[in-house]
Image (cartoon, rainbow, N blue to C red):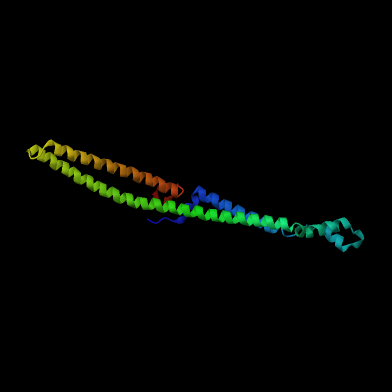
Length: 194
């Protein structure tokens, strides 16, 4: 059965990588915004420019300093922008690697489900054949056509086949747990609860 990829959004590793990517995007935007001058307009500045009688040179120099600050700190700001860009790229590549790893986990678990179901079917058929074989060996022994060693050999083969069926059942259950973990757990699909 096909499963929607939205199920992977609940995986904690994907959620962590997504949050890291969003945080690095915000940091990059903040570093880009640092290039813009920080001007705070208020009623006092407007009245300063309109009324030349209340001229205050400290306020004018403060305004000019805030407009020119990005020019004087340009090297530091460029370095911070480059670092933020590198961190964002690293977070994007990390997110991509995490998602690809999650898809690989799900694909491996789904492939394992199919493969183990086939193996289990073959092992069950082999067990049933060996069960009939033991019945035939027992009948041959009872009729005197074969030694008890033939019946013991048939029992040994049957027990080995039964152990193989049990081992494959355990592998199927382990694979279901791996699939559940790969999908982030706790989901239900259209009427069936897992």
